[in-house]
Image (tube, rainbow, N blue to C red; front, top):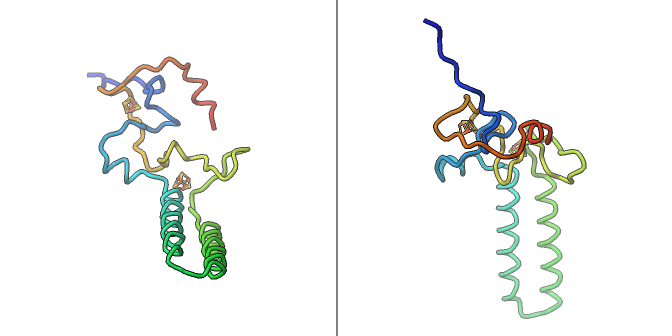
Amino acid sequence: MAELQRLGGQNCAYYTRRRCTRTISSEASQAARCTLLEQRRKVGAATMDRLDRLKNLADEADREVARRHVIQKNLDQITRLSCPRYVPKSGAGPLCQHQHLVACLLLLPECGGRCEHYMRRREPPHKREAKP
Ligand code: SF4
Ligand code: SF4
């Protein structure tokens, strides 16, 4: 008997570059977050925390020196962050080609064809496929 084949998911609203961007669970979404963005977020949060603690310094000149030091440290740390799979998005600053909102497409599951969650999108498929 001939094997039944699933229809392609290219016209699905969740389909992006062969990946399924549908939210399955908060745990899965967390696991698929862009690691570079996450690292930047953590460095940024630590910097904000350090800047906040500078308010305890009584001397204004000391505060300013410390503030500059913290900001420089933040820049150094951000510059050192990297992802081995990072591919710059042409003409879009430091954005990565694999980034989809806060997720990494490479960490999302591949669309295995039209499934029960298929949701037809209005935009023609060739337009989405053409996007880098
Ligand atoms: S490949 Fe790109 S989108 Fe994926 S984790 Fe690395 S920097 Fe983020
Ligand atoms: S068809 Fe199903 S697996 Fe494919 S992108 Fe849509 S929801 Fe995801």
